[in-house]
Length: 207
Image (cartoon, rainbow, N blue to C red; front, side, top):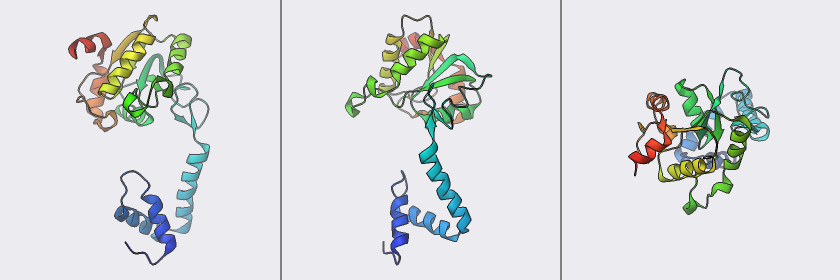
Protein backbone atom coordinates (compact mmCIF):
# COMPACT_ATOMS: atom_id res chain seq x y z
CA UNK A 1 0.00 0.00 0.00
CA UNK A 2 1.59 3.24 -1.20
CA UNK A 3 1.04 6.55 0.61
CA UNK A 4 1.62 10.07 -0.68
CA UNK A 5 1.87 11.37 2.87
CA UNK A 6 4.12 10.15 5.69
CA UNK A 7 1.60 11.58 8.20
CA UNK A 8 -1.18 9.50 6.68
CA UNK A 9 0.99 6.38 6.66
CA UNK A 10 1.99 6.85 10.29
CA UNK A 11 -1.64 7.24 11.35
CA UNK A 12 -2.65 4.13 9.42
CA UNK A 13 0.19 2.15 10.99
CA UNK A 14 -0.94 3.19 14.48
CA UNK A 15 -4.51 2.06 13.83
CA UNK A 16 -3.30 -1.35 12.60
CA UNK A 17 -1.87 -1.94 16.08
CA UNK A 18 -5.44 -2.27 17.35
CA UNK A 19 -6.86 -5.83 17.46
CA UNK A 20 -8.83 -6.82 14.37
CA UNK A 21 -7.82 -3.75 12.39
CA UNK A 22 -6.08 -4.40 9.05
CA UNK A 23 -4.50 -1.87 6.73
CA UNK A 24 -7.64 -1.29 4.65
CA UNK A 25 -9.84 -0.74 7.69
CA UNK A 26 -7.19 1.49 9.25
CA UNK A 27 -7.02 3.59 6.09
CA UNK A 28 -10.81 3.93 6.03
CA UNK A 29 -10.83 5.11 9.67
CA UNK A 30 -8.02 7.61 9.12
CA UNK A 31 -9.68 9.05 6.00
CA UNK A 32 -12.92 9.35 7.97
CA UNK A 33 -11.12 11.36 10.65
CA UNK A 34 -9.67 13.65 7.96
CA UNK A 35 -13.22 14.55 6.91
CA UNK A 36 -14.22 15.55 10.43
CA UNK A 37 -13.98 18.99 11.99
CA UNK A 38 -10.63 19.65 13.68
CA UNK A 39 -12.33 20.17 17.04
CA UNK A 40 -14.06 16.80 16.75
CA UNK A 41 -10.78 15.01 16.07
CA UNK A 42 -9.09 16.89 18.91
CA UNK A 43 -11.83 15.74 21.29
CA UNK A 44 -11.37 12.15 20.07
CA UNK A 45 -7.62 12.29 20.69
CA UNK A 46 -8.08 13.93 24.11
CA UNK A 47 -10.58 11.26 25.15
CA UNK A 48 -8.07 8.52 24.36
CA UNK A 49 -5.26 10.39 26.11
CA UNK A 50 -7.34 10.96 29.25
CA UNK A 51 -8.41 7.31 29.21
CA UNK A 52 -4.80 6.15 29.25
CA UNK A 53 -3.51 8.66 31.78
CA UNK A 54 -6.45 9.05 34.18
CA UNK A 55 -8.17 5.65 34.28
CA UNK A 56 -7.97 3.82 37.61
CA UNK A 57 -8.72 0.34 38.84
CA UNK A 58 -11.09 -0.18 41.74
CA UNK A 59 -9.20 -0.98 44.95
CA UNK A 60 -11.93 -3.44 45.92
CA UNK A 61 -12.94 -5.37 42.79
CA UNK A 62 -10.25 -4.34 40.22
CA UNK A 63 -12.81 -3.11 37.69
CA UNK A 64 -12.01 0.05 35.71
CA UNK A 65 -13.00 3.18 37.55
CA UNK A 66 -12.79 6.96 37.61
CA UNK A 67 -12.07 6.87 41.35
CA UNK A 68 -10.43 4.58 43.91
CA UNK A 69 -13.72 2.69 44.31
CA UNK A 70 -15.81 2.01 41.19
CA UNK A 71 -19.43 3.05 40.75
CA UNK A 72 -20.65 -0.54 41.21
CA UNK A 73 -18.87 -1.14 44.52
CA UNK A 74 -19.93 2.29 45.84
CA UNK A 75 -23.58 1.76 44.90
CA UNK A 76 -25.52 1.14 48.11
CA UNK A 77 -28.30 -0.56 46.13
CA UNK A 78 -26.04 -3.45 45.06
CA UNK A 79 -26.16 -6.70 47.03
CA UNK A 80 -22.73 -6.90 48.64
CA UNK A 81 -23.39 -10.42 49.89
CA UNK A 82 -23.11 -11.62 46.28
CA UNK A 83 -19.70 -11.51 44.60
CA UNK A 84 -19.52 -12.49 40.93
CA UNK A 85 -16.01 -13.63 39.99
CA UNK A 86 -15.11 -12.83 36.37
CA UNK A 87 -12.03 -13.14 34.22
CA UNK A 88 -11.82 -9.62 32.84
CA UNK A 89 -13.46 -6.22 32.56
CA UNK A 90 -15.25 -7.18 29.32
CA UNK A 91 -17.14 -9.84 31.27
CA UNK A 92 -18.38 -7.25 33.79
CA UNK A 93 -19.74 -5.20 30.89
CA UNK A 94 -21.37 -8.29 29.34
CA UNK A 95 -23.10 -9.28 32.60
CA UNK A 96 -24.21 -5.73 33.36
CA UNK A 97 -25.83 -5.62 29.91
CA UNK A 98 -28.16 -8.47 30.90
CA UNK A 99 -29.73 -6.45 33.75
CA UNK A 100 -30.12 -9.77 35.61
CA UNK A 101 -27.51 -9.28 38.33
CA UNK A 102 -27.46 -6.80 41.22
CA UNK A 103 -24.48 -7.93 43.26
CA UNK A 104 -20.85 -6.84 43.09
CA UNK A 105 -17.87 -8.22 41.16
CA UNK A 106 -14.29 -9.36 41.48
CA UNK A 107 -12.12 -9.16 38.36
CA UNK A 108 -9.35 -11.79 38.37
CA UNK A 109 -7.44 -10.38 35.43
CA UNK A 110 -7.31 -13.75 33.70
CA UNK A 111 -7.49 -17.45 34.50
CA UNK A 112 -4.90 -19.97 35.62
CA UNK A 113 -3.09 -21.24 32.53
CA UNK A 114 0.35 -22.81 33.17
CA UNK A 115 0.99 -23.23 29.42
CA UNK A 116 0.68 -19.46 29.03
CA UNK A 117 2.79 -18.79 32.12
CA UNK A 118 -0.20 -17.56 34.14
CA UNK A 119 -0.29 -18.83 37.70
CA UNK A 120 -2.38 -17.79 40.73
CA UNK A 121 0.20 -15.16 41.67
CA UNK A 122 -0.44 -13.29 38.40
CA UNK A 123 -4.15 -12.95 39.22
CA UNK A 124 -6.07 -11.12 41.95
CA UNK A 125 -6.92 -14.35 43.76
CA UNK A 126 -5.26 -13.35 47.03
CA UNK A 127 -7.20 -10.10 46.94
CA UNK A 128 -10.39 -12.15 46.59
CA UNK A 129 -9.46 -14.26 49.62
CA UNK A 130 -8.97 -11.08 51.63
CA UNK A 131 -12.34 -9.75 50.48
CA UNK A 132 -14.09 -12.91 51.58
CA UNK A 133 -12.37 -12.71 54.97
CA UNK A 134 -13.33 -9.05 55.44
CA UNK A 135 -16.76 -8.87 53.82
CA UNK A 136 -18.05 -12.40 54.50
CA UNK A 137 -20.34 -12.71 51.45
CA UNK A 138 -23.02 -15.38 51.42
CA UNK A 139 -22.39 -16.49 47.83
CA UNK A 140 -19.53 -16.52 45.35
CA UNK A 141 -20.71 -16.81 41.75
CA UNK A 142 -18.10 -18.03 39.29
CA UNK A 143 -18.86 -16.49 35.90
CA UNK A 144 -15.76 -17.69 34.09
CA UNK A 145 -15.65 -18.86 30.49
CA UNK A 146 -16.42 -22.62 30.32
CA UNK A 147 -12.92 -23.78 29.46
CA UNK A 148 -10.42 -26.09 31.12
CA UNK A 149 -8.52 -23.03 32.33
CA UNK A 150 -11.69 -21.49 33.73
CA UNK A 151 -12.65 -24.67 35.55
CA UNK A 152 -9.13 -25.05 36.95
CA UNK A 153 -9.38 -21.54 38.35
CA UNK A 154 -12.76 -22.27 39.94
CA UNK A 155 -11.50 -25.39 41.68
CA UNK A 156 -8.35 -23.62 42.89
CA UNK A 157 -10.27 -20.72 44.42
CA UNK A 158 -12.87 -23.01 45.96
CA UNK A 159 -10.11 -25.00 47.64
CA UNK A 160 -8.60 -21.82 49.09
CA UNK A 161 -11.95 -20.69 50.49
CA UNK A 162 -13.36 -24.04 51.65
CA UNK A 163 -13.10 -23.04 55.34
CA UNK A 164 -15.57 -20.18 54.92
CA UNK A 165 -19.32 -20.59 55.29
CA UNK A 166 -20.06 -19.49 51.76
CA UNK A 167 -22.09 -20.88 48.88
CA UNK A 168 -20.12 -21.54 45.69
CA UNK A 169 -22.09 -21.44 42.45
CA UNK A 170 -21.28 -21.28 38.76
CA UNK A 171 -23.30 -19.97 35.85
CA UNK A 172 -25.46 -22.60 34.12
CA UNK A 173 -23.90 -24.13 31.05
CA UNK A 174 -26.17 -22.54 28.50
CA UNK A 175 -22.85 -21.31 27.16
CA UNK A 176 -21.03 -23.97 25.15
CA UNK A 177 -17.91 -25.47 26.67
CA UNK A 178 -14.85 -23.76 25.24
CA UNK A 179 -16.76 -20.57 24.50
CA UNK A 180 -15.89 -17.06 25.61
CA UNK A 181 -18.24 -15.40 28.09
CA UNK A 182 -18.03 -11.98 26.43
CA UNK A 183 -19.34 -13.37 23.12
CA UNK A 184 -22.49 -14.94 24.61
CA UNK A 185 -25.71 -13.15 23.75
CA UNK A 186 -27.37 -11.22 26.57
CA UNK A 187 -30.38 -13.56 26.87
CA UNK A 188 -28.23 -16.69 27.16
CA UNK A 189 -25.89 -15.06 29.65
CA UNK A 190 -28.78 -13.68 31.69
CA UNK A 191 -30.45 -17.08 31.92
CA UNK A 192 -27.13 -18.68 32.85
CA UNK A 193 -26.86 -16.30 35.80
CA UNK A 194 -30.42 -16.87 36.96
CA UNK A 195 -30.11 -20.66 36.64
CA UNK A 196 -26.69 -20.87 38.26
CA UNK A 197 -25.91 -24.13 40.03
CA UNK A 198 -23.72 -25.26 42.95
CA UNK A 199 -20.11 -25.89 41.99
CA UNK A 200 -20.38 -29.38 43.48
CA UNK A 201 -23.20 -30.25 41.09
CA UNK A 202 -21.21 -28.90 38.16
CA UNK A 203 -18.24 -31.04 39.13
CA UNK A 204 -20.40 -34.19 39.17
CA UNK A 205 -21.91 -33.51 35.75
CA UNK A 206 -18.52 -32.89 34.16
CA UNK A 207 -16.53 -35.82 35.55
